[in-house]
Structure formats: C-alpha cells, structure tokens
Amino acid sequence: MNAMDMTNRTALITGAAGGLGRAVADQFYKNGYFVALNYFSSARAAEDIAVCMGDRASAIQADVSIYADAVRMVETAAKLTGSINVVVANAAVTADALLIKQKEQAWDRIMDVNLKGGFNTVKACVPYMNYGGSIIIISSYSGLKGKAGQAAYSASKAALAGLMKTAAIELADQNIRVNMLLPGYMDTPMGRRNETAMDAARSESILGRLSCPKEAAELIYLIASSSSITGQIFCLDSRIIW
Image 1: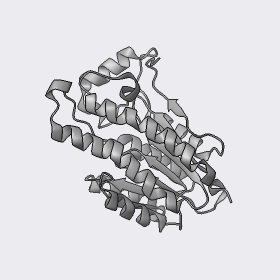
Image 2: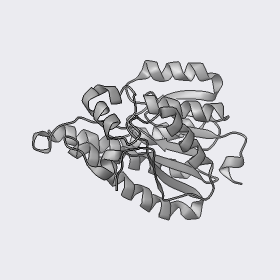
Image 3: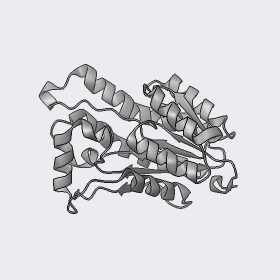
Image 4: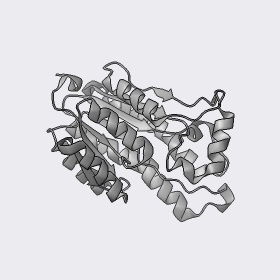
C-alpha cells in the first residue's frame, strides 16, 4: 500500500515552531494529516500550534543534533498513527560571522543542528516509514551560492545536498522518496534577525520580492504527495543561482 493512500497519515516537521515550520504544519494538517511538531526551545509556540490543531497534533521537544533525542522524537511521532509518512527536516540555526572570526563552538553547533540533525532525523525515521513515504530536507540559497559571513551555515546547507542525493539512492527500493527544497529568503522571525540581509535578498530578486512561507509549504506538500519524484533539488528563490 502506498503511504499516500492511507487514511491515517503522520507528518513530522522538525523546527516546527518557526515561520516556515508552522506554515508546513498547517498545510499538512488541513490536508488531513496527524502532525508531529518538533521544537527545541520554543515550547510555548509549539504547544500553541498543537492546541489549535486539536487531537491531530502533538508537540515534541527534541534536540535533533543528538541521535538519542532524534530517535525518541521519531518514536513519539510514530505512535500517532503507527507509522511516519512524511518527514520535513527543517530545523536549523545560524550564527553569522566572517570566516576568520567564526568561533569553533558556533561552527560546531551549526554543523550539529543543520547537518548532523538532518542525518539523525532521516536515519531515525526510516524504520518507521513502513509503507514508503517522503522525506524533504530544507536547504538554503546560501548552501549553493555561498554568502559572506555564512561560512558555517553555507557549508552545512551545501552538505545536505549530498546527504539527500545519497539517501534518495539508498532508500529508493523501500519506496522512500528524498528531495530538497530551497525556500528562499522569507519574512519570518529567523529572517528578520538580519534586516540588512533581508533587504539585500529582496533587491537581488529579479521579481523584487521575498519568498512566501505559505507557497513553500504548498510545494512541500505537492512533492510529498508525488510517488515518482526523488533525488531532486527544488528552488523557490527568485535570485538567480547558476
């Protein structure tokens, strides 16, 4: 049975308390999914979202950079319907600094959450995707283009592309599709932390606008609903990369 044909479906979203994470959670919820909302420290925001969704949502605290935490998160999410059908690996952090000024501790934390966290989430979920399913890894324009002041963030997001492509190859025989989305710079709490970068992204856009979390969530849902797309990178950013 294809996971997308099941009546009870669970979507696990990491970093679900943020702007994009919440939009993704809303999209799957309104399409009938049970939604597992992972958060690290934003307990109130995650719980508020879960309350709004009633008995088809659960907030789960976990640090995805720690494998044991990722396993516990996945086990908790799987109990909602007995399996996991969609995983959106969205959790990420950044601490911008020029390469020569980047602190080792900050570099390690960014790599641990963004890259190792993606690996931990994917690895932990596979045993619970019993009928196949979809994994979507959230990357960044900076991961393909590079950006001054974001050596660690860019490196972590670029490395996720290799993880995605390898996972797509290895998991194809289990009917688990793995893809990547570059959502673009969005007017979210994370994006607003650097108003200068947000303004620059808008000016570099050939449309003169930022990306929309709702549109990104809609595309994520479309990718997850497909039975034949895997190993692909999708970009919603209107800044030219190549």
